Amino acid sequence: MSLYKINEVFESLQGEGSYTGLPSIFVRLQGCPVGCPWCDTKHTWEVDPDSIATSTRVMAETSESNSWFEQTAQQLIELFERYGYVAKHVVITGGEPCMYDLTELTSYLIGLGYSVQIETSGTYEIHCHKGTWVTVSPKVNMPGGRPVLKSAMLRANEIKHPIAMQKHVDELDQVLSLLEDGSTPQIYLQPISQQKRATELAIKTCIARNWRLSLQTHKFIGIE
Ligand code: SF4
Image (cartoon, rainbow, N blue to C red; front, top):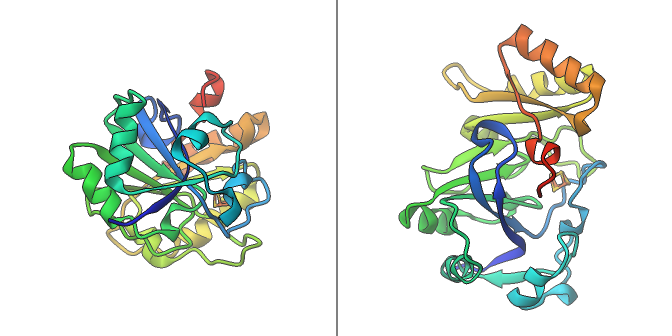
């Protein structure tokens, strides 16, 4: 079975997008070359061979450690059981999870009855089970120089875009032009850092465009 490089696994509530409020197991994969300046998981960017550790040690570390461990899909299920996780929804995030071929992992989880969601920047081809819910949060013109791919936009079940100013809405329009007639992903605007001006812009734009508002509810209620 394939090995996945994992930075963190934890159980919480999904705070964003269409699954908001759903108990979820988050699997954060290590590695991301996209380079978003505001990224709050910069510790996942590098896959440093010196930072590999056992799952027990990585699970005991803080959520901002750059340590990682390797697991197969089957070992990951055993880890869920060892830590007593009971949620039936798994969110595969990063880092940039689509650096990995996720077909085996998503198929295994779905085969066991989990619903599975991927959160990706849209800058990699997406390889996963067809029943996976794909959230694309398109990262446009980032320092890593990776373009948002049309194939990723077309695979998206939901598109979730953090905004603080009109420029970010314009960027979203730019990548939405990659969609084709008949593709109807749910579109969410998410105010960055709960800023008042960002929230007002998001509300106004959602109403005008018939898009949805996504709030980072986990931050309002103080959970990870
Ligand atoms: S794509 Fe995600 S993990 Fe990668 S730099 Fe951007 S925000 Fe961070």
